[in-house]
Every structure is written in C-alpha cells, then in structure tokens.
Length: 256
Image (tube, rainbow, N blue to C red; front, side):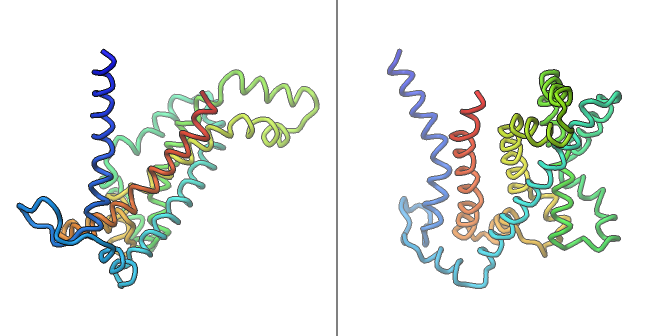
C-alpha cells in the first residue's frame, strides 16, 4: 500500500514538474524537428538573442513586473480599506453582489464593455489604461477576500482600543494592521498573479502597444516561434512559482 502511494505521488510530482521542465528545455533548444527525439542544438543562443536583440522581451518583463506590482499594491490597499465599510454596511449583501460583477464576464467582454470609456479618456493603448483595467478586476477580488477578516472578533479588538482611550487611527495602525498582516500579504500575492497572467483585458485595452509577457507569449505562438515563446513562458511562469513558494514558506505556514 505504501509503495502504491509512493508511486502515485511520484507520478503526480512528475506530472506537475514536466511542463516547467519542458519549457526550460525548449527555451535552450534549436533545430528540433520531428521525428528527432533530441534537439539538434542545445545552448544559450536563444536566450542571448532575446536579451541582446530588439525583441523587447526584457522590457516586457519589466513592464509586466511594474504593472503587476502597482495593481497588487493599489488593489490590496484600497480593497482592504473599502472592505471594512462594506462588511459593516447595512446593505452588505448588495455591495458584495456588485463586487462579483466583473467575474460574471470574461476579461475580454469586460474590456470590450469598457473600451469606449478608455478611448474617450485617452487611456487606450497606454500602461495607465492597462493598470486601470486590471485594477477594476483586482479591487473587487480584494474586497471579497477581506470580508472574512472583518468579523465579530476583529470588531471587538477595535472597540476595546477605543474603550481604553485609543483613537481610531491607533486602533487601525497598532491593532488592525498587525492582525491583518498575513491576509494582506496573501491578497497581495493573489492580486499580483491576477495581473501577471492577465491577457484578454491587457491585449484589448493596450491595443498591442503595451506588450506584457502574456502578450509576447501569444505573439510568438502566432508566429510559430516556439523557442522564443518558451523563453517568454519561462519568464512568465517561474517568477510566480517562486512567489508562491515564498507565500507557502513564509506566509501560509504561519497562518495555519
């Protein structure tokens, strides 16, 4: 029985690792034609060409990182603040239903509905427009995520500080924020990932001018440039994997 469990875990582990390993292998490969089992070339040529040429891969990586960090920071911060007002509001259920609205539509449909306003405001095809579009998805997620935090126990802590003579600011800074630190970090990671892997909304609002890594991946796939596409996928996949590991190692394990 133990051997079967070990075998099942090994197969599951290999199934999880294989896509990442294959992307890494493909990014270092060249001249790999059917029915050859191994590539004709294996080395750093593809990476050197991407990093030294005008393909814009490095700029796309920096753009994706900057946009995702900004969206995660804004979405988590404003979502945390507004989630308190919604959690204690008499019409809480109505506001939560409205918060779910962006997830009733696909990102492409949502972007198409909002595209008129982006065009009129001059934000279409700009990184500011992409940040705003992704924020409209990250913010309601953050509001919904933090509803579990604003419970009866949290409210009692806050009222205790006020009863002992503390101000609302002191209650928020010295009690609420330390209590919510773990959830804030988790929400930050989640909203970062939402922004990092976003394609449909980014492609429509950015109109091809804002080329994040997700846009680059689909661009190379359409061009049938699988080696460059694999490099873009590696840059797209490995940072979130590292982020999820850090989340699991230093945040999640402390919450459970």
